[in-house]
Length: 424
Image 1: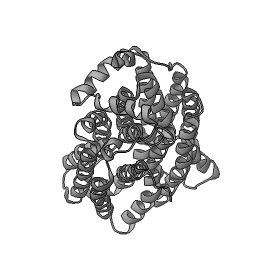
Image 2: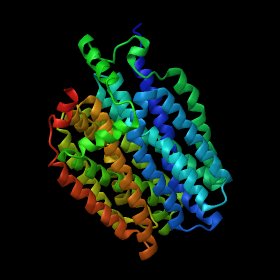
Image 3: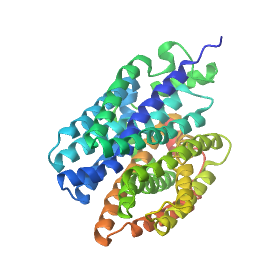
């Protein structure tokens, strides 16, 4: 019997960790309204906690990559799960809105940021030579799976038992994963005397040298940002991913359920629509990883952002108290390209900046994604308060997505001076 390569066990644990992070991400939208109703807090107050969470979620990612290089993937991942469990669990005891900002925003923001997609990208780069694009796609699909599994459960739990039970469930899931991470996860293939999956001897040696010569402190992340910011490719990648965050976590994850509530649709029904997004995101993200290994990633990004822009513009026109076929079609479009942008973007970072610096650069690109999400969460909440509905917020997001599609055509391919300098 052929022995399963340990890389696949590491990938499985990584997938489960990303699912735990996704469980919290999917819970915020359905928790907003019951928390506001219980404590009498405004949409601006809850949106502030979400915005702080999203900012720290993104900004933590590149530093977490550097810390994983210095202290190891296993330690940082286990610590991040502990923060996620602590921050989510303590929300059941909070009494003031500043506590929501501290727990949701700071503790959970740092925890989820340390287990973000850059964590998955680092695992894929270290443990896989073959099937790397597919693995990144599968890790991206972890968000969809987390939403698919947990969102209906969260909505039903909140409806029948209250939001505290849902928060406690996320905390328990995160805590239970800590021993699994500690027992299975290894920092590098060489730690257990194996090569990366699909590598020959020369590829294994190059990968090992690259990893061990990587930046080992958080200051290295800042140095990489300084160097990358001098290239046009970085600003195009970061700018388009800023819009990616705006049009996904920023407005859909944070405000779709409240928007449906404005139209008389209950949280459970609205959550079922997001499950459609989750189902098709699994297909779209894994498919995108497969396509990224075979096609120009820039063209894929043009298609993804363009479809997303059309769906965003159409959404306020078709929202209503009844679930109609056009709305389901829009949910399918959202799903197919939700995290499908990740494999092409990871690949472009790797191609342009090299395998090691490319992972850190993607960390900063991902940070821009979450900053965009944070800005969108705050701006969309402000638009809702100012105008009484979310229509202008949807149209703004749609216009930005179409602009991102056009900008992707200008992303260069090939080695930059940043990568050449690192090689020297």
